[in-house]
Image 1 (cartoon, rainbow, N blue to C red):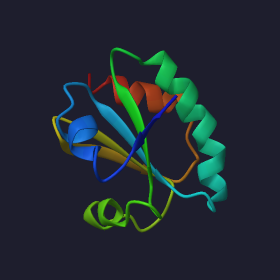
Image 2 (cartoon, rainbow, N blue to C red):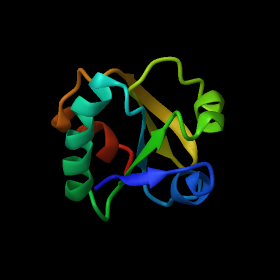
Image 3 (cartoon, helix red, strand yellow):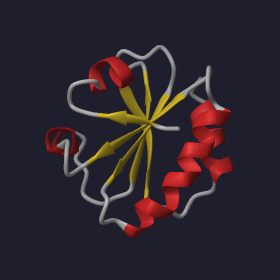
Image 4 (cartoon, helix red, strand yellow):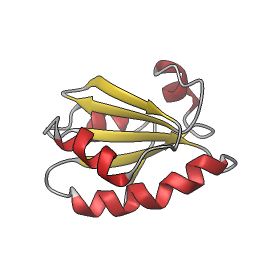
Amino acid sequence: MAHNLTEDNFQSEVIDSDQPVLVDFWAEWCGPCKMIGPILDQLSGEVEGQAKIGKVNVDDARNLAVKYNVKSIPLLLFFKNGEVKDQIVGANVTKEQLKAKLLALA
């Protein structure tokens, strides 16, 4: 299961993480977000110990959405050592593509 990320835990869970982190910026009202959510939950179990996956609800964490310039959701940001290394906008991506991109940062 993907971690729920908030403005309070984003620093410790993502920026200070010693593992690569895939962060999904999403919202309840977003159809494509609901499509990719179960894929991210599956992937979270597959990469446990090598990488982390977290979800930021843009309606609850507006400051994070602004900080990372979220204009369209779902927005998937790939972090390593606290920096954004790659991104994917939209849900038109497979679990295998996400896994390969994430583990390439490990």
